[in-house]
Image 1 (cartoon, helix red, strand yellow):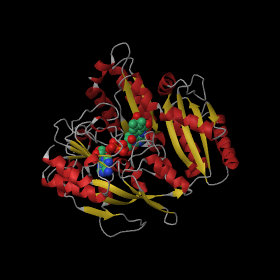
Image 2 (tube, helix red, strand yellow; image 1 turned 120 degrees about the vertical axis):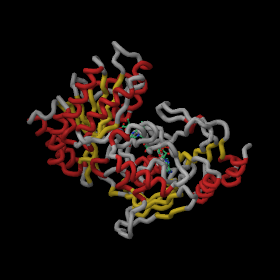
Image 3 (cartoon, helix red, strand yellow; image 1 turned 180 degrees about the vertical axis):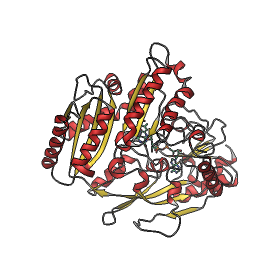
Image 4 (cartoon, helix red, strand yellow; image 1 turned 45 degrees about the horizontal axis):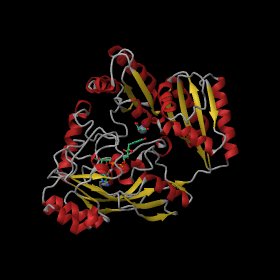
Length: 467
Ligand code: FAD
Ligand code: MLT
Ligand code: ZN
């Protein structure tokens, strides 16, 4: 056993230092990155994290923070040098306090997101962060990626849901910013540095999260439309009719939906006709369900009359609504079964989405005739997942991934033309580290580097990620 492993064991206990079986930690969810860690260390408390990081700082050992390991940009995966230590916060999974008057919840970084949603519901509150990986991602990872998901439209990104943080800095010092304050203008708001930093500035050990009143009724609708422009017209119409009760508004292309029903045949489209585009939407209210259903029916009726939509199915009960959402939640996995696609996570001003789709589709079709595009995502937030599967006639899956750089250039240059972002919610990690240099202003990158050097002068905290 190495000297470092022995010292780590003295801090966290023998069972919590892994030296050989790295299978659950060394690869990412998509099986794109295969790392080789020196050790995996699993502290049980913030004090243990601080001691482990201090030891790494003294020995100049690189650290890779990890939570649920569902990230999509390789941020939580070590390099192949066999010298990096993964610090997993998975054992730190206690809810420390729920305060229903302050409407906050103080939690350790290793809590599974779904557990936090359930804890909030047990207290008649809502913790609105929601994404398909919620059964396995952990809040420390959600905060570190500033995760988005399907309710950003109403409640904002993770950044908007975090009120306080506790963080172990790269020196091993513990910063306790676990404050549940709605107002605090006492200088730079440090928590925002760590939110979305993808583990490059410190390890988040706990957080104070914002809670909301639990909705009394939620109405789900699955809607068929002619085009992405009609989806934008519908968004505007629904916002006008229902205000901020519109909590989710997701676009799904017919090809994307067909992959879900192909690989999950138990899931059926609520609108089996031959439609090109769909929107899945949730409307939530604190009033009773019958009144809400009526308002949604009226709003969609008007949309039908005005020919904004082609057809719609309104869920009759919660079970039917959940079934509609299963179609959306299995989109990512169904694409894995179809063969590796070249994924994108772009954002553009909402009003420009239809134009963006036309421009990017045309540029790709010109370069790769017969290209198969899976367009879906959080259109209500201006965020599209625009994934490009191999053209069947000309490419096999292994040939297709070699086109990675060329395809990215087409999609990301088109994004830039619309003043968009090449990473709306998944982060930079390793996947887009080189690519952001083309799209982010040199001054912005320089300031990011200055912040990194100020906090992590030895460059031990997740090196090689983000910048
Ligand atoms: P990890 O993968 O473990 O880590 C992610 C990053 O955070 C890494 O850089 C890691 O080093 C760092 N990190 C982890 N823990 C800490 C910590 N305690 N302190 C400091 N740094 C840390 N993302 C969305 O935004 N929206 C979606 O809708 C969405 N849907 C998804 C659906 C599926 C099926 C899958 C597989 C992923 C999806 N994701 C989505 C991506 C992913 O789930 C999120 O990025 C999530 O927030 C990552 O959480 P995690 O616990 O798995 O973090
Ligand atoms: C989603 O919205 O489903 C995710 O962000 C995952 C993905 O992009 O595949
Ligand atoms: Zn997403």
